[in-house]
Length: 627
Image (cartoon, rainbow, N blue to C red; front, side, top):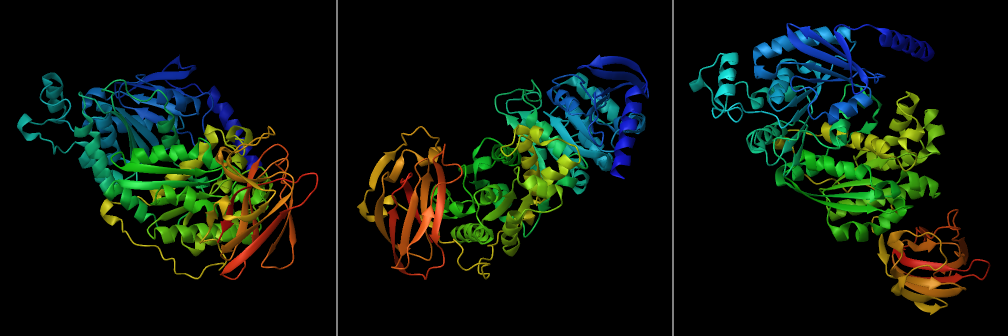
């Protein structure tokens, strides 16, 4: 069946590319442009070289070709562009009626999606809100740029020619028009909000022609109060011109992510809610957001896109962001470093956690995967019972064959056990990426691989932004209630009390020395968080003793080319051996948390550790880990 569908799609693409469309043909940005008339008014459609799945399109009611960065980017992505001139009709009922004739004509003739992005620049924004109110079923999202939202702000009575044109078009008397005029954007919002239409806007903070505070700022506040999804990018020192953005990526990503059908591949698991964090952002207007993960979180990418998204959703909110991504680390080290790398920097209202890739590649077994993730959750909720937590499951090469066979990697299922037990929202991005690749949307190379390209990161960010959309509601609808953490743990030995001890905690050192500003001298690679820090260094065999209180003990090491074999015993029991040389140690001082024991009785214990003689006989301890 799939082969039949693909063959049909191929034949259709040939037919469409050969089709003679109505109107005068020319080129715009290297693509075919057709100009024609509908109801006597100028209209045009620009056809991409290869249409995107679903045949999405964006429609301007005014000023085609002005500040076209978004249009240019979408055209390259396979979107159709459309224009119908209702520029001087001030969003009137006549304008909407004429535009309906245009819509009804171009959708079948050009085989466009039933859903469209309405793109309103300046006075075009006034029409965009009117159209979305009249025909919400036709709109996937609105992009309004420095939009006129209040007719008394622009043109206002201080521009007599435009004002008179507005009065004549609407058939209004001057004395009957005030800031509550029925055609103003704010009066269109209830039906738009009911339809769940997302809005993105770009505005100049120094716009004196269509002042932001008199127009889009009021609309944003009202729409958010209704529970609508609205994001605003304010250019602080920009006037009415130039419109749009030099880099249109934030707008383009928003429009693509909200296009009808895009979300069908997203694997979002909603549990509980996100009321607490959204309450702090919406009502308190002050929020702390933390990002805990490995290299995919540490690198520039999805987290930065999510930060921008939050600032666009809540432009009046003061955010503090905690970046706690460290390459190579999974859930177990996350649990033990949570206090130092997250809580010591602030108490999050919203926490993102990812560890599936590193838990898998670092050979942590099913139980350890639960011990780590459950430990993070319980530690976080003890620090702030109102903290919302979102699990993210990223992808990498070894997951792909499993996902292509319809099998979810065990590490994701184990993390999902924790998310389900504590009613936490989660997003299976690994499954989403696999699904989109199977559908032919992109390949692994375009995605960027394990450490995604910007395109791949935008896939991750879009799913997170969709989750935030799903939990958006009127400000009065958010509750602020503590999460329940008195549930029975999945594993009573989880690392909820995990913390790091300084290397100076050890005693009876032989062959070890403390270097306050350790940097390796062998030329191997490093992680920036693990150099220029106090480190216990042993290079030719040695031993130490550590007294500790807890049920688990581990060594937080950097395991490089000289990482040796350790022999250790706890409380006088039989010595055990541990080879600290990892598959990556030959060329990298990789951070690694070796758990030596995790089911000890709570109480005081003594660890004795030896570094054995051999070809590799080094040990570099940044911290001891105790639960």
